[in-house]
Image 1 (cartoon, protein in one colour):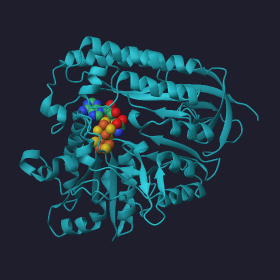
Image 2: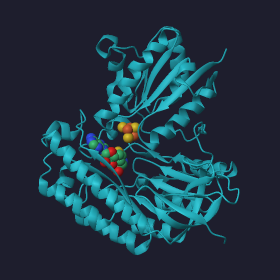
Image 3: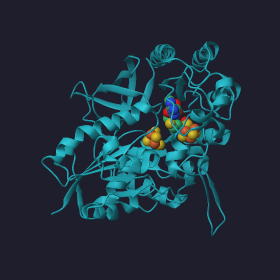
Image 4: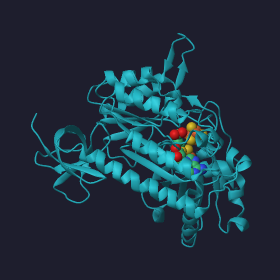
Length: 448
Ligand code: SAH
Ligand code: SF4
Ligand code: F3S
């Protein structure tokens, strides 16, 4: 009988993309996928280590899943992804962990999963946490098991060597490596043929993508790759995430300006508005450098949405540094932001060399100030869109009403409107914005 496998994914888009690769590797062998943990013979948690609470969530879930062993003594519980890589065999220590884990598989070892599953069936605990400097899973066609059929991710590079002092990713994801351009373009073409209308090119650092073709000697930069994908079809939207400010070139912005199907939304994590803090973070840019990139975006791509990531309460952050983050937010007028409290990660440079000295209460208060300000900025940004018309790619029916559809505009804002034209997911519609909240735009379909 075929065994059923259930995958639960935590963390960033790269992890969601990796889970589709895992599903592909596994279902090629004698396994079928299940959409419920309770029905599965094998449960994989694809995990994230970015902050302590991300790991805590996974530990809680692992503990909660143990009760399924009662009815299913052969149940296999595997930890995949960044926690597997960070914690390695310690996850298998039943006594210390207070629970049982059967498999530990790091992000570069997924090809080994079928063999590791056999090892577990033979009564062994299975571990592979070897990082690779080459693995990109280029030849594997992801199984889009949780997809809306409209938008899809394509991983174009893996790993990170930037070593921002707070960040665990270089340790869990290893060396930076890019995927062969032909395999990316073919995957994008295949998705378009299958009805997908939006592709997000993914990497920890997409704009440091680089490929040198051994035979022709031709070099591919990120702008060149993005242009090649954009040329597949004007009805295929292209997005990308995440870009590091130090690699955000004018050339890339010009390519975006040239192709209407490359979306007008740039996610550019600032982390802090204080050059002192940025230096301690090893971000390799100052506030002025960051603002220079913002001005370049405003100049070359008027109307482009800009979103960011911000960390509150990093080591040594003073009240003045925090005020500078707030002032940066005002100065840029971010459309959207992911905002976090600094969480010390074992093994990082910050954990080794810098004191985590901002008291928890102060971190929380600063984070709240950042969140409050961003809510204001997001509302302002949405209010400025009322009266404007946008092309919206429809993703599905609205959560609140069957009669309404929901999609996104090029700026990545969610737009909800009445489905008075029998619109289907994957259709484009011109929508005039009539109202908004800080989270969504409301509008109505206009002919044309
Ligand atoms: N590669 C991306 C970010 C990946 S991690 C980039 O460099 O922009 C996503 C976000 O998590 C980061 O941008 C940062 O804001 C946040 N983050 C990373 N490590 C963190 C930590 N130790 N504590 C709090 N937030 C963190
Ligand atoms: Fe982490 Fe910095 Fe790499 Fe982003 S660029 S993944 S924050 S080390
Ligand atoms: Fe988390 Fe790993 Fe992504 S630590 S954010 S899942 S790269």
